[in-house]
Image 1 (cartoon, rainbow, N blue to C red):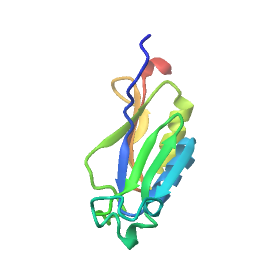
Image 2: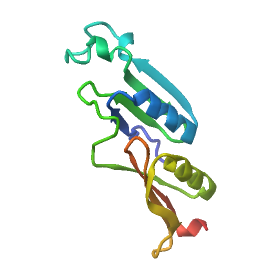
Image 3: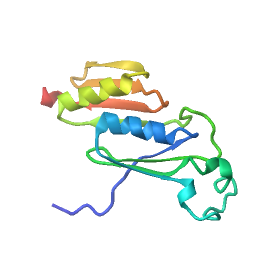
Image 4: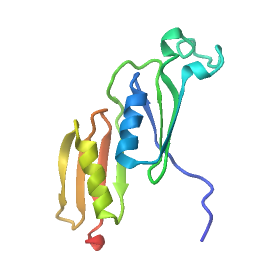
Length: 146
């Protein structure tokens, strides 16, 4: 087997509520959460003056959730929305039906289920939810795992 030397980790951008969102994802997925506010960097750490501003000091410059599910995130100095406005979705796929169902249920709290997590016509169990932070999640449990 070839050793993996490159990983793809989603990086989410928030408009000031990165800490809250990442603490929520830690509750959902478990793992270790690292948070670093803009104030931990040098006063002129960024070329963007907005990132060096007083209002950004308490906002999150770097967040990483490490564990079975890995996510990175930060507060975008030019975004003030409390919901994600990008067009993308994150997909969770695997054989552990109990864990994936639990993730779906937790992500649904204060969110909106757009497709219930049920067995689909193609055989897999699949569902979609937009969580309370505007992130779209897809959960797929292949039929071969039932």
